[in-house]
Length: 310
Ligand SMILES: Cc1ncc(C[n+]2csc(CCOP(=O)(O)OP(=O)(O)O)c2C)c(N)n1
Ligand code: SF4
Image: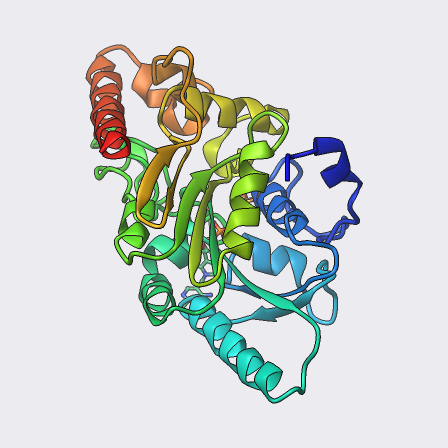
């Protein structure tokens, strides 16, 4: 069915306001967007790794979720989801549950790219009917902005501080979407918040309603860790996709497809200069950092284009 922004926005929220995430946090936009893709008659079981999202939306005995929610440890959110999904399938078969439940895990990049990678991989490989959603804010924000394997090269994080002997993070960002796609699951995609949320909505809907294990990687900026003004969230996301720093694509049954192609690919510095974590890259003598960042984005983009055309 064609996407109708007004109709989607009229649906009752499944993540209530009043949670404690910072104003302008991408995590809440990601969660609300994904849960909005659920059909109103379906219920969900949300499992969540420890993170900003968890500590801010679920402080027992309070919850911001209209659906069932399980907080599990950092490293086993996907395994928890897979376990509950298996129990549901058995109970449904025995006629003990009649309603339809969908199974969704949310993890930050620390919980997904790093600590929970083994449980994510296991759940995808075993074939559970679930969606794993990474809200990627490119650092361990909840414990004070430490670098993760999703943090981009040159970013100033508390464990990769910029100073006289350091220019920020040394390594490039891990490409997790490609790693998960290598599990040959039915559906994997990258998205973020642009325009009227069509891209996020369609991918979330596909992921939830495709049978089998599915994966969504959602770039979810963090005004505190990235150091930009909170009202610039949408602009930061637009710059991430228009510079091709965060390409929007999906892999459906093994077929790679770009879901958005910038009319004009803009220079990566447009994305970098908006954020305090990259401020040092604009100091005199550091031009090489911007050149290398641009080279990296160009190489990755060319490779993605080639893969999508195969
Ligand atoms: C096994 C384990 N190690 C470390 C911690 C401490 N800890 C809590 S939240 C967090 C950071 C989470 O980062 P991420 O998954 O990226 O989510 P974010 O907070 O950025 O949203 C850490 C290290 C923990 N709770 N459990
Ligand atoms: S620190 Fe960042 S990720 Fe955490 S709640 Fe605040 S804006 Fe969101």
